[in-house]
Image 1 (cartoon, helix red, strand yellow):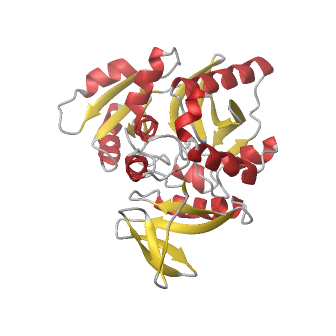
Image 2 (cartoon, rainbow, N blue to C red):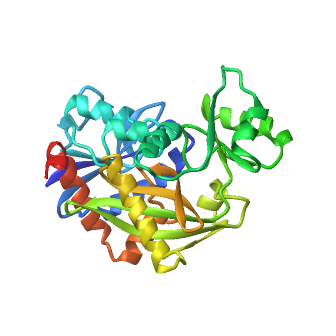
Length: 329
């Protein structure tokens, strides 16, 4: 049996969601194939958690000691939302020590976590997106010029953050400074995007059995002004799977979502957000470690598609163990 670490936590406010995701992922790993261990990576400590006891992780080789016996892992299943598990830091660390891990590699993680850089790369592949401006907290900016580019309303969001933390919909010039202050609490860089008036969808995409595959397309109908934290995690939205789209538009969403995934040479589980305007899906962002709590979209999509999560994580672990050969199939 393989010794598998299910790693959750993180250093951002998303750690609460990560700890919830951990339980579904842990239960989705076949206990007849894997010796499963919960591992917490928190600012205050890294430790394995077994029967409510904590065993410190040795960062030299990501092992731990219990009852005088050293325990090592064969693979890591990463379920940390936000930093340092979704932005490339842990992926780079695991590569340095030779530890196989699920999901994309450190470059794809860093790229997709940085919204402006990800959009800039995808633009080269012809992926439609909103008009945008980028500002840094320490560099002077002109709100009038921003409004001239994006128009009103627009969205002000931290450049590197998840779970819709720090995002505001700005409808007037007077709302800009409070929105920027909110976003700068999450990141020193802020992305301002034009408002797209259309249907929002969330698309789960994976690489499964050597093929890029759309798991599901979910329509998002927020009870709030947009799909914010409350809408995502506290029930203030309707999530309709499959999305209520005509056949041609549905096919276009699947096509764009797969093109986005392959253009970034992604691996692992992903969930991307799009706004469909006049039949054209416009890319918003990609989550390379989407939520796996009971309220999360991707598990709902997998269930609707008849994709057993045990089979999915078997595939993810197999890919992790054979990562070097993945794009040479």
